Image (tube, rainbow, N blue to C red):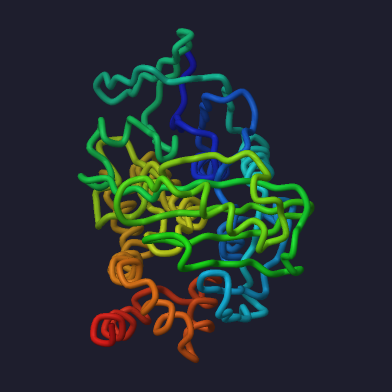
Length: 375
């Protein structure tokens, strides 16, 4: 049986980020991943460039487009343009490259990586966790990190994250070529998607396009929406292979730690409930979890509660306002677009949120009052 200070379930952005930061401070880390390689992710790959400050190495090898301009539209017209701050742009990454880059740096710091390791049992014996794969391999550790994404069964099993899960339903497609998308420009489309929006993020030689709804059950008209959207972006309406998924979004302050265990990333339901940004909270949570685990393993603290407190302060407080904006905006989307997007100061505010320079709490009360009282 292999043993470590920390075992991390999941080799995505959150898990690899946690692995790097823990290994970088001298801890023995084992990262387990059910896949054998780096699968195509349905994630759009967008993240604020401000996450670079979390790492001592450059993330730019995984960045395929630096977004300096965001175009918004309502039912494929009525365009609004936001210029992002030059010193803090929005990055589009190819997720497979980002995960591989984070993993490589974790391994360089001494982390071990076991792939094709599908976890089917987790037990705790006194102060040790025992993790077993379907093929019988076992690892044991003092601390366990759950980082296996929105489909994770383990967060709920160990009473971590929100009591009631809330999902965004998404359909995504990756297409070869750039279509009509301009250089350094991404697109958000409102109006076509009930209770949600569509997006187009450019990569070096392709485009990530998707639709997502944030209220109610999974939508049944994503094909019809994409059939309208794709030609507007310069592609055949039936192009690409489409992938449906359910993404856990932030649904209230919740406990993210237990006795020798934490949950990070999508498994922790940290995704932005308004704009569906999941990469930034995945990377932030990996960093914050690693800090708290390192102090706990060294005996500086008695438990891991500082991780929950830290994520509430650094992410959750803003998401609480983002959730309120989402609930109002997506119920009255036409008014939301008029008052929340077309307002003279709105594009710059959205740009600041996307770039990580501003949180929802800075604008929420004014936005919600506008949407409620002028509908």
